[in-house]
Length: 218
Ligand code: HEM
Ligand code: HEM
Image 1: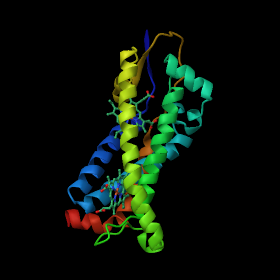
Image 2: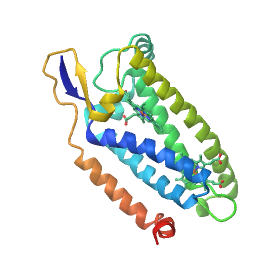
Image 3: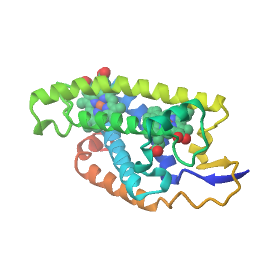
Image 4: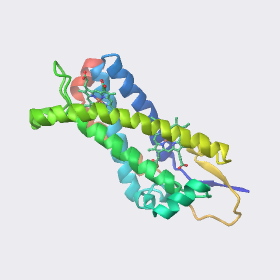
């Protein structure tokens, strides 16, 4: 039994920061803290855009091109979990679903308005019909996102019961492998991802983020 590094530092931080961000996004609107909602929204935007760029230039297990599998592979993966260094075939479609749902949530949020005081930064560029549609979809899509999260956690529990503990790998980056053959490295140093993330955060902080940040910290 050997251990192999499957998730680089950026993927792991991306995952847990995403979980925290979505919790903050939910509680901030529930508590009427729309400025915090905006700041957390811009943070999530920087996070997901970096993840997508990292999906092109990053580690082998981060690659977006590795997420496409045949329906046959998905069915086989559902019947019997196989040893993979990246996402399994069914897991890959879960990742695609999450990226689509989160991007939809972000884009509609940018065009949403609470109808009283607060407008998303793209509201002034679109028609009022588009704002109404974005508001509607921002509410509906969040419910779908919640179902997807429920399903995701249920799947992780099922994998654990079937003897595949996935959570530890998402924390430490490493997983045990039965194969003793020397694995070529599948992860890259994440410094480029962090540089892109920092750049995006700065751009967002100095543009759309200025007003809500001043409200929160000024
Ligand atoms: C993944 C990111 C996001 C999540 C999970 C999220 C989640 C939510 C939720 C749960 C609501 C309340 C819906 C309801 O009352 O049923 C909401 C409302 C809202 N969100 Fe977001 N949001 C996100 C991103 C954004 C962004 C980026 C913006 C704008 C910068 C934004 C602007 C708004 C606005 C203006 C409302 C309406 C508040 C109201 O009706 O009082 N959201 N969001
Ligand atoms: C807001 C809630 C959550 C969201 C939106 C979410 C989203 C995601 C995404 C997008 C990935 C793919 C990572 C990537 O390739 O970039 C992923 C993987 C993963 N998530 Fe979550 N997650 C959530 C909560 C959780 C929780 C609570 C756990 C632990 C119980 C968890 C455990 C995992 C694990 C173990 C993987 C790797 C799966 C694999 O080996 O293929 N997630 N999640």
